[in-house]
Image (cartoon, rainbow, N blue to C red):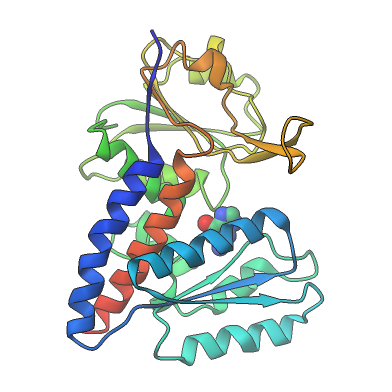
Length: 293
Ligand code: GUN
């Protein structure tokens, strides 16, 4: 049987609609949420992301600034730029788009962003709060996966979730979210990674598979249990002569074979991607609300 699509595009649009009401309530109290996005260099995929973030923010009534800084910027100049965003009271959320050019130390620079404005959820304080099960900004992609599952009433509670990938942005935080003792979490979580000799041994046992390795099509139908829920976080640009741009986006999941085994599956594009942005906007609105005490 063909799998049901988990429509991130529609779910994200619903979230943006609900945020508009919260933005109106903030406006009544004289607060306009502000989001500052910084892109260093001209990586084409990052450029697409920041353009989409800017447009989505403006759609819900968030004031958004996109700073496009040269690839050759010094660490000091970028640090000074981030400090200016920290001090600006009109800005409730700061995002530094990754990856940074190789001469810039990402972790050190992310740590400079005020934890109170860390709407990306990448600061060690935010990640520490998540690990400890405390409230705080949650990283947008992992949280977006949980909210997408919730929208389809698919609870991982008591189920076996197998995550493929251990990045600081996706794999590790999603494991932390889904193992929390809370609704739409409370799962038994297995994290597989490049050190796992045979990924299929684990994915075949999974009720939920979260693919976040950044390798096109590595999860194939023979690696999936009948009826599993499959979430594809991968966004890989592969070359093709079939599109005008010369590339197409594919996930880490081989959609063709996996969609015949899974009960639910996310498409790429239109699955997790739009959810990431919706959660970024949610964190930004929440950050603005917190200034009211
Ligand atoms: N690069 C890819 N995804 C993300 C994201 O969610 N936030 C930031 N800052 N950079 C990214």
